[in-house]
Length: 322
Ligand SMILES: [Mn+2]
Image 1 (cartoon, rainbow, N blue to C red):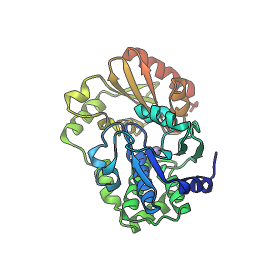
Image 2: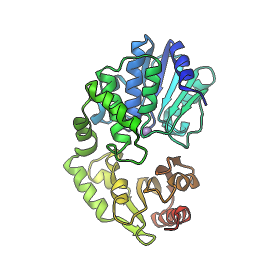
Image 3: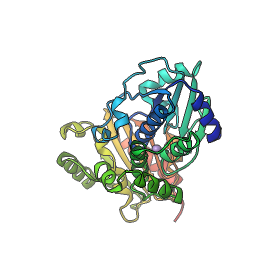
Image 4: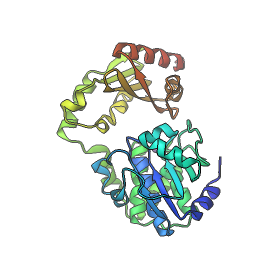
């Protein structure tokens, strides 16, 4: 592990860099990437952001993201991964990152406890959002927090902290948010655009999914299922499932909530949330996934009932006696 000073020294020496957010990009990884991209431009370092899939439209109010590419367009000196706990999180771009790892300067800045320290230089520190770590780096680089950077950082703060409602929100989270607001970012707008606003189709998809939540383990484990083809039926993409897992978590007596998205037939993308009595990072790790103690994810294959049984057992094993 490196200190943020070491990371800053490494970054400062770069002439050019490619920034890698994680696949199925969320507000945190995109906020990190946008803020870093803009910061590097202030330092005269040529950089670009690469994402394998198109960036969801609701994030394009962040101008540094509008220049993102599908693949690196030049031979950069450094590869910087943000908010990615392991190289699998880079999706298809993983191959490019790993090929680069041999001769390039690779940097990994992340806030997941499960981070595998896969780069040459790694900075991993638990925080409500990885944007808090990026802010540390920007301060170390003496980059001014202009309005664009403030908007990017606040995007990560708001989305990854569940609008400042998660247990890992600290004074530091709020101090950075205050700085962002003073720098021109809006909490109200960010919340409305990224957390609250939804299409009619999404509202109806939500209603259907939530109505069918199953409550297992004496009501302590909530399981929401999005069967294959459901999103298609509503003309929605996978990011429409965001928030469903949290809905289950807030039902009385629930300790662990899961959302099972059948992305291909017999292939389930699982999101897990815990209210604190179960370590879902360990549950996810049972199946080769990971994340945080209270928010994690993994992939499971098989028939739905089989998958639910496996999960129920793993959750039961990791659930503290009440
Ligand atoms: Mn994050």
